[in-house]
Length: 325
Ligand code: ISE
Image 1: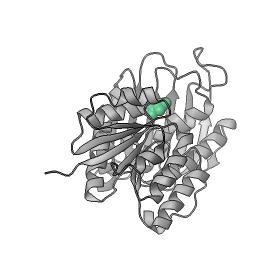
Image 2: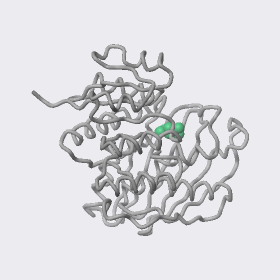
Image 3: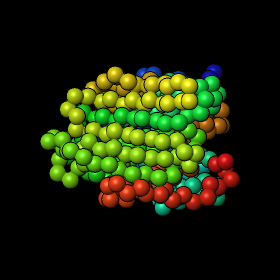
């Protein structure tokens, strides 16, 4: 009989319930055994059709139920640390939706927790790394078949954003994906971030820079631009053009979907199935706590940059611990 990973999902909101459906209907060798949410009715609705799954409003009780091997965290980012630290201390493997935590100081505490345990347990939900197109570009960077990668030009368009969305979210909820994917594609750290503003859309709510252009450099000299437009009204469009010395490769150009779930459905499925397989094999191959920390550091530079358009802000990173090299 194939071994099954028993997963507790923390948070039954938009991402949590999307993952629960995925685990229930499309993933192999996995079983949702617990759903934790302070809103009991929401958690109850999320376990419908899942035999043996239990609802908890207290996360610790779920971990102590003896029915859980791994945890999936899908609460809002500011609540991640309070779930991550106890789960890690108890030795659970954790899949944590992005962002790892909202700032680099708290993200560093997760890195330190893993260091003191002596192993990596957390995978961060940067799903683009599991998208075929991005994987193709990364393979080309690694093989060098088209020469050196020189530049990445990206587009990140949302149909709309919630009323609660602010300039901060443009950086830590939207552009955070590009911070990670740039690091993944180049295998380098982002060294500087700059924000350019211009004519604002009449649909942008007050205080939101929309569209914006985010410029970055990597420590190996790759030039990056990201055009964002989060109140486009017409759909979700995410693309990247990678310019190599002898060719350019494109990913996602002309793809417009209603939202990110449709655009990245295959990437999400691959991400979660690979995480399940890795957990069962006792491995962790996806984006780790260092990646979550580095993305948080990029966001901090991005937030300073958005406050001072036109200024190039350096990304400050602690030294990378041995565990992540
Ligand atoms: C959302 O959380 C995502 O992850 C989407 O990919 C991004 O486009 C959107 O701006 C975020 O709010």
